[in-house]
Image 1 (cartoon, rainbow, N blue to C red):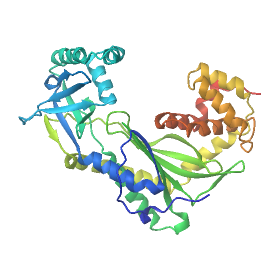
Image 2 (image 1 turned 45 degrees about the horizontal axis):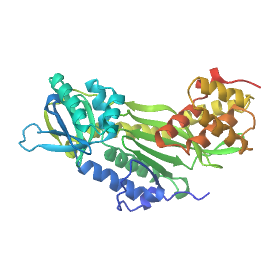
Image 3 (image 1 turned 180 degrees about the vertical axis):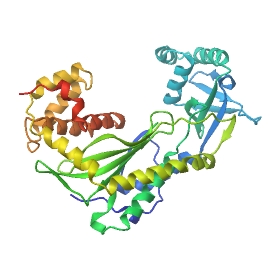
Image 4 (image 1 turned 60 degrees about the vertical axis):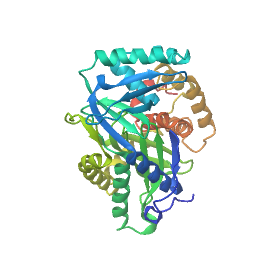
Length: 375
């Protein structure tokens, strides 16, 4: 299998894609960098009373507007679906009701509802995160922004430092990244430490995740990548930071301010990455657990039914897992290990957030134990 290019050989410049669920292969790292930098450079955070927010409707949509603290110029913004979801939660507006108003094109009524409730909740302080002319997130005034551009640059810098002491063939390499409306996932593989699990070659790696918009914590997780079919599984975080800090004073906050706040967490990420990428213990322990699943023979159809009943997968996902297992004759057929590989095969076909959920479930076999039906 062809390996991705080494990190330090990539020119960090390029075009900026404009999508909400984008996968960046190793060769597309310049585009990821440019995309994140554009987001950072065009974003601002406004901390103010929620009562300063005013909405107005038109024939085609509704907008959010406010006069930033210390300014006389009104900002008019288009809310993203994520902003709208957060806003409805904070104001107690049922999302189904909001959807119903929009489907009926009653945008004035939607704006009236928003204005009534922002006035009612007026004393509450919030942070409005904006990118260009979009309102991207509505957060608490205690939200600590850890910028995804800074996270990415910190991760790549740390990996480059680690690679300085390695032969070229043994260097940690960027595998891929996933960028959604609210989250970023970075994946790195370490080709210097192959693991043999029942005849399958796996390479260890790391997954770094972050949300700039209140949709999850900053984390570093370990990953095992099965090379024969390019499937991966991950497990619990080596580092997890919830974006909560001290209250922030009213005002406008720029990218420079956010970057300064992110620096302390970049140091912690660096330390965790160095530990994981230079230490076998987390992977050795995990390997033994995964190897043990190859010795457990299961009734796959009945197990899938139990997983469906427990609502960890849908019926369609269950059918796809069975189909993937039938096409994989190398993964200890009929075993729990076979099931795990079917789950990771399904995962890589799914939208990013669901992919991560399935990879985490496959990487934690103990969570599946109550649902296993043995043969």
